[in-house]
Image (cartoon, rainbow, N blue to C red):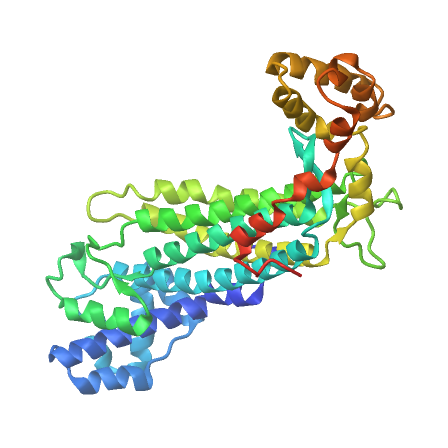
Length: 438
């Protein structure tokens, strides 16, 4: 965890104080259930809640001797509770505490991430509606293709993050399970009622078969989902970085008064935030492979996954939380240049309308091969002139073209509005009927 890329609410989930606090709740709720079953005295369960406490420094001190974190924790709590503490952890094993705690932490982290996505979606929707009909050039392979709108670009991003939200909801449900099943998961020394009770109290569902540990395919899917979300962040960040290039300059990150872009060149305004997001996305994706490799544990349990999860649990969620918030800020303040978009759209002498002419020629009886040849030979002249020539004028001067199409028909094929006639339909699909209008 790097403080530079951390936000306090997410960091708080992963502090030792928070972790041991969850451990205590799990142990205390389990003791309540055992008391209800008559396995331990009800007075002992009450004493654990009343007197239970811990100190991180003391747990660390005990662990240096015991080399076992759960035993160190239980020993420290017993120092506060007294004799009744002997009834804690009855029939339980360390994984019951550790895995259930991790489930709680990942569920809480998911809730923050879902709130992050909601904030991003709100900004994307607002900016998409703002630029719903702002014409710009669509590009394929980085090359001018046909007209789109900047609002459509943002609607695409909205739809992608809306899918990511649904994925995270599913991943949260998948990871939020409780295992209190004892050694090798057979419930030999603890009743399944205890697991159900703890699950209800901690906001989890029961793990059907825990084999002492919660199966790590759940965790793998969770971290894979975070990786997909990170990739979507990079996709949008990369789009902004390309649009901010000097040769394009259709949009750029907000540049605050007093901000400096370069230590050497005072004129620079660099896309530093979206470049940072690209790097952070790489880090989050980097945690996916270790999570996948954690699935294959030996028999009913080993701890090869443990050290991995101590890293990737906090780091992946903290980093993604920061990245989502940063992307929301970028999109909220993104500076958009419609005039530059229009200039770039018209830069290549009308080449962006070539398909309409091609289709019109085929409709007029020209074979597709000949129609393609006629349009392309004129388009290449415009290309070679760097847009100085006009495709429309060249076509109107080409006798093979005018033999099939009138001048008026050619001119009609250069109407920008034709390309934007279904924007409302797309917005209705993304935002719902009547919800994509300014």
